[in-house]
Length: 628
Image (cartoon, rainbow, N blue to C red; front, side):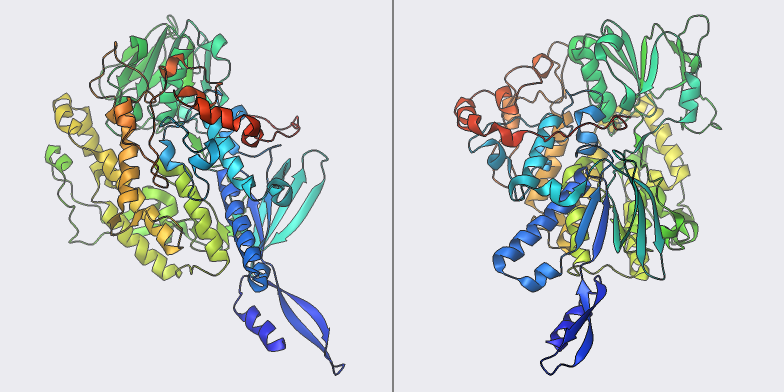
C-alpha cells in the first residue's frame, strides 16, 4: 500500500503533496506524502475557459464510467474566475456592437467533434454556411452543459475580478488576489498552474496618431467599434467612415447598410487580397467606397472634412506622408475598426521567471539563407538581402517567446491562442493540449528544444512573403511599394497569399493537435489531411463567391449560392450547407438559424419542446459589469 502511494506520487509531479498520518495494523504510526490535486486557476470564462473546463469535465466523466479511481484522483482541482455575471466573453451580445453580428468563418471551422451541429440542431437540420454569433454562443453553452448540467456552479466564480497574479519560483506557486464584485470581499488563493483565458481582445486598440487625427472632429461621434452603440442614432441617414479593412470593418459596413446609412467609406492603410474589405468587388446598394492605401491625418477646421494621405505605418508618429492628400467630406460618424490588445495588466513580472525577451527572442539568420522562389518577388525591382537577425515575436509572439500556448520560461503559465481564421477550433485544440500537459500525457520540450524548434519555424515561415514582411522591414517596404503600384494589380490578383498563410497556420495547429492526441486529425508539418484541406477551402468561400459581382447582384459574404453551399460539408458528419432563404440584408436576425433556411419545418416541430436547451443562462447583472 505504501509503495503504491509513493509510486503514484513519483509519477505525478504536478500534484501538491499533503501529509497523511497513517497507522498500520501493527499500530506503527507513519507519515505518508499523499499526492493531492494540482490546483489550477483560470482567468476568464470565454471560449478558452469554457473549452478547458469542458475537456476536464469529459475526462472526469470518462474515468467515472471506467471506474478508474486512480485517474480520477489525478485530475486537477480547477477554479475559473470571471469578472462578468455570465460566460461567453466577447461572444456575448452586450460585449459587441450589435446582436446582429454573424461569424466571419464558416460554421464547419466551429463545429465540435464531440457535439456536432446535427446533435445540437437536430438530424436533418438545414443550416447556412455562416451563423449568427448569438447562436454560436448557445451552441458552445449546450456543449459544455450536455453531460455536466451543473457545469457553471461546479467550476466558475462569476462577478470575481482578478486584481493581481504573482509567481514564486521557490515554491513554483501562483498567488491570485481576487475581489468579489458583489460584496467587495478580497481573497487570496495559491495555485500550481495559471491559465490566462481572458482573451486577446482585452482593450480597444486606439493608436495615438489616429486619436490625434480626429481630435478636432465636431460633426458627430468618433469612437472605437467596441464602444459603438445605437445604429439608429449614429448611422441611419448618415455618412459613416470606417478606419481599417479587416473583419470588423466588413461587419460594420454591412450593419451600417442594413441600418440605412446614406453612405459608407472605408479607409484602408494597406490594400491587398489579404484584407477582407478588398475581397469585395461590389457592395449592397452600391453604398460603400473603399479608399485604399490611405490613413487619416487630421480634420479641415473650416469644412470638417477628413484629411487623408498615404503612410507606411499609421501608428508610428515618425512616418512621413508620401503622396498627395485627399479630403473625405460630410462625414457624420467615425468608427475605429483597429482591433484590440490583450489586457494582461494583472500579471506580475515574476510570472515571466526572469525571461529576457530581447536576448532570447533574437534569431540569427544564416548567411547562406535564401528565400524560396515566390511570384511576388518577381515584382520587386531591387535586391533585398535577408537581415542578419530577426526577432521571433515580430512573427507571432506566442510562436517564439512561448511554446505555442505554454510560456517557455515558465511551463506553469498557459494561455489559449489561435489564428483568427481558425479561432474556435484553435482554442479547442490548445486547451486540450494544456490539459494533456497538466495530466502528464504530453511532455513540453526543454527551453533549448523550444528555441531550436522556433528558429527553424521562423526561418521556414520567412519563405512566405506575408511572414517575411513581419520580420524584415526592408522587405516589407519593398512589398508595400509593389502593392501601391497600380501596374501590379493584375499580377497580384492572381496570387493567393491568404491561402498560403492560412495553410501554414492550419499545419501548425494540426501538428499541435497530433502532439496531444486531439481526436481530430487535420494534418501537421508534413501537410494537411483531407479534413484540413476542406477547412482551407471553406475558409476561402467568403471571398471566392464575391468574384464578378456587380451592384445589381451584390450581396454579403453570407449570401452564398446554393450550388456553392452544397460543397461545404461538415468534416465530422458530412452534412452539407444550404443557402439562406432570403438575402442577409433582409433577414430578421432574431430568428433561429433553422428559420433562415427553407425546409426545416419538421425539424423545428420536433425541437419545439426542447428549445430551452439552446438558451444561454443569464445571471443577475452586476452594476459594475458591462461592455467596454
